[in-house]
Length: 191
Figure 1 (cartoon, rainbow, N blue to C red):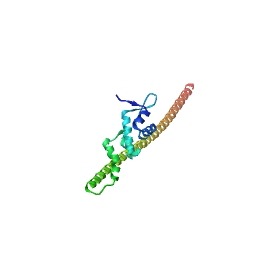
Figure 2 (cartoon, rainbow, N blue to C red):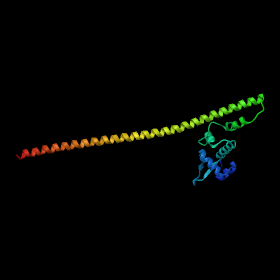
Figure 3 (cartoon, helix red, strand yellow):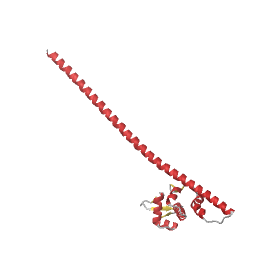
Figure 4 (cartoon, rainbow, N blue to C red):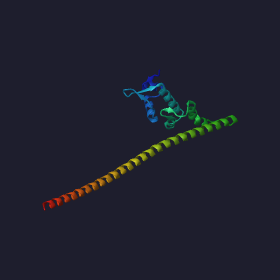
């Protein structure tokens, strides 16, 4: 059975202020559930997620980097070990070491970690950029299609109005001719 926590209880479990949870929720787009009265309630999974976020923040990650790791409020691609590696790669690379063969190997591994982290960040940035561009492109296409459809409907209405006017003119001309013929017929009958 999963427990549900009010924001104050969840904040105590994560060891932060309640306003921090609200800020993280808003900035990271976390899907926090609400009760019938609109009050937030947190599950144990939410509390764990906030603990992971706090851990990443304590390791120096900015919310922008954390947002790239979190997709739909869940960790994207990295498991807990991957996050640990991701968050500590800079720390390990910056740690001074005595020059020996063992430390040299560790620096090379740290360089690989940093390269992997950089590659992952670039992939996430590229994915996010593509998604934003696709949204903008879809919006532009949608607006363009709507404008073109509006234009085509106006052209069609103008054509229909023109056809209707021509039809009315033909009918009027037809009735005038019929009226003329009837008058001629009456004159002939009177004679």
